[in-house]
Image (tube, rainbow, N blue to C red):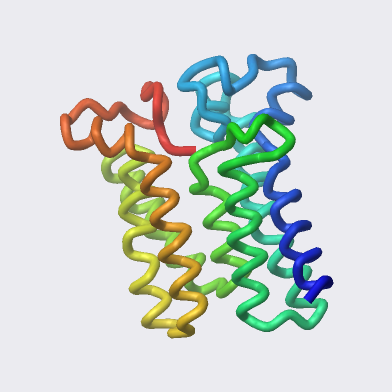
Length: 201
């Protein structure tokens, strides 16, 4: 039990490493918590520092969801512990202990988590995001619809109750973190990926 708790704690701590803040500091960019939308995520970094900085942030956020899951699986963890570590990493991104618990909205990290837990589900969610983002040019809308469909992908491809529960739990938190975006979408005020001041990460 102690070892399992250490795995979960390690997942949270890795998730707490904010790729956006670290990338901006290393590249001499404004702190994403005070610049642009104030959200430490890839979309805001794109606005503050361009495509290269945003790509680094996106990859970093995905890896900190993917790597903890792959690591505990390699150590023999079952699906329940993998899901617990995945959720811990996701919570670390949302509420990072190293950055005053002010984290991003969780899209990229959840995509990384999904790739780690069951890569076909992760790929389908990413494909859904890309298709919707390409069609509507609104990151938050693409993220919300992709995550909304993810439980259906789980039921179709890997109907494990614990995996479904973890995906639903993370999805609820992600929707909560996007509540301002949802209000703007309902009012027709949500801007595009480049010009929106409160978009998805």
